[in-house]
Image (tube, rainbow, N blue to C red; front, side):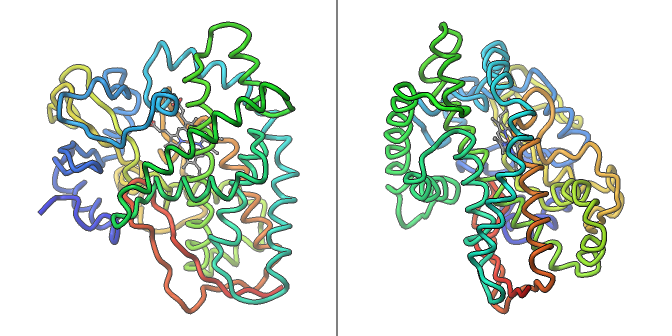
Length: 390
Ligand code: HEM
């Protein structure tokens, strides 16, 4: 039996057992190939900042890694790169994706949240993922990048197909990739012809000013921002609402003191963040993690979710505690690849929760089951049935 079996249904029980028995475990990775799984807080944090752990897939030993193959025009992104390429590209995006841009988004985010809640009417039942947690981030990220309305629904279908592939439809993921490639090619051509006040137009301007950003790198960057900016945020919003509905006393407290929302968002990210098993690295040399030597070229998986529930760092870690000190949580990564969209992710989650709690003083879990997606890459809900009234 693989040590990580049961991760989707009981992630925190599995992680507790793994953390308690050894610092590093040999498991079958998400591609079925052997990998080393790291679950203790100190080890995960240290590994995230270790320059000997590369993100470049060509560092993987022959036959050791068989991830899903994306075409170069989508694959040349920050999450597959090390310095100096990573440093060059990250610097360019940081220049375009400024805190001012995120601040300017707060009012439109609230407006979008209100529209979505208006559409639900004064009372009823709904799947909050489909009606709220998913459409909000897709609207925000598409507005930010400048993706026209007509493509937004398609994009959701494609990303869902890639994150949780349906084993009965083996060709679906390939088709989704081909469709995305076509979509980005067309989008970039449109923006070149008619630049607008959006992030993609700014990035194109940077690209066309000189050769600081290759064409594949530009397209891959747009893909990564759209993909990362959508998927994880849906999940964090959904997971946060579920955590609150399962802890009515904390929900009541937050309703009384909404100013505590920003710090509550940090606890939701620690307690049930989306990055269950998301982070992959390849050692360029033999490295010792928690006293175990991992040979160069093997696959290392770092779990922020496991680290964030390590009692050595967070006392009584399985308890949701909106008052706790969450500093140093790893839900948004750590080190040079620390989430580029962190300020936006925080703003969206905070505003989504604020609007929901203000608008629906009565909000409870619905009768049907809460279902988790069958994915170890991203911890999130397939559906979140709720009953609400104003
Ligand atoms: C709640 C939502 C989010 C979570 C939990 C999350 C989580 C993460 C994590 C854990 C990493 C590090 C991965 C690694 O080290 O291998 C990361 C990187 C990244 N995230 Fe996020 N993210 C979120 C939202 C966003 C948003 C809204 C955007 C864009 C608008 C975004 C863009 C990125 C990018 C571009 C990177 C790569 C940065 C680099 O390699 O330098 N993320 N994210």
